[in-house]
Image 1 (cartoon, rainbow, N blue to C red):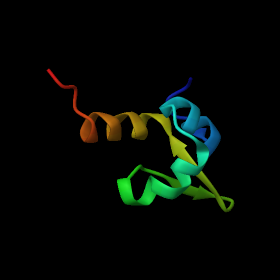
Image 2: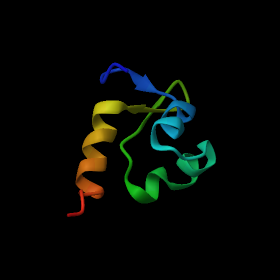
Image 3: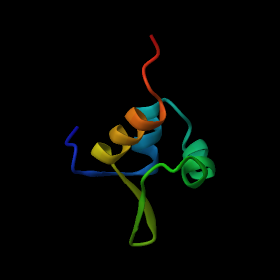
Length: 60
């Protein structure tokens, strides 16, 4: 998947192993980087990956 492409909610849900409703209900509270494009929520994979690295550190 190209890191600069914008993903839909369904694509992000599949990438994270969550349901689309979880993304809609939690993206603001969790600070998942997003933007509105034409009224639709979109996510850039590179920004989501940085968010994961920051918010979900690897445990030893």
